[in-house]
Image (tube, rainbow, N blue to C red; front, top):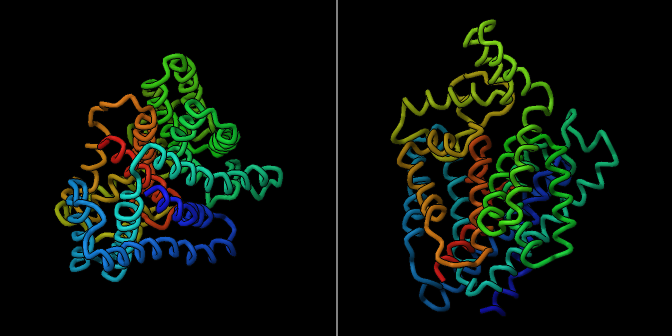
Length: 396
């Protein structure tokens, strides 16, 4: 089994790397990688189908989370019957099916031990080293590396750094503290420097909560530094630019401003997210059971002729999946993740806590960003691979 996994090392590494390289500000690279990124997924599916054809049986038993995800995928496809964009719904449901087969039926069955798990995690971290290193190099070639006063380096925008860091940070910390890895220390420096310079408040919050969960549950001596770091991050969140200071001062001067003015300031502080959330929630209320079809999130504002300024997404995983597939879709999609998160840990394996920190960091940043079901972005593959590793280790 370990030999089989090693034969797929390059494929796992390529899948993570290609998706990260796609999330770039450089148009030529982006155009190429938008096609190339699907090649590993297609090969994964070919492996699954060839094994199924040769052995005439599934590579593993069907488990509880498969039932949830299979029903979820069926609903994604069925939503094309009432979707505002049926072709887009089928296309994006198809990509999620590719992800499911690749991660849950090709990678997951080959993880039999902690060594297997660590090998896969290393491949993902090795892949992340490349875009983060390029970003640090680009730091010396300003203004290419900046969007206004916010650092984006190689990536498409500053928030890309925030989401990716929130997902990877607990795993990097585990690699350093448990395996004393030197290259992981270099990666940590690149990751944290990029995160702070990016000014991604959601990324800072998700990274802090996910990383702190790992430190608090495994390393007593790091609890005080984690609290101190958290306070520093909170200060950064409220001082990076004056956009966060304006709503704060508005709250402090309640007698001089109206509630409407405070909401407007908060909307500015959240880059228009509150306004978008209000619109999306109003749309959910109109179709709470079915939604508007999977994959239509970024089409809804234009479809209904609603002007929302910059950005077309819901800017929240939780609101986004609900507006697409209704409240039942929300429950089906997130139930396995929350079950995995709140399931009591019976092992002393610190990697389990790092993986839970990864899930926590991803969900926290997902309160303010849309990414968890968008298969072609830089974050989904590492996240769901981490989820199946966590599932396997807890099962052991």
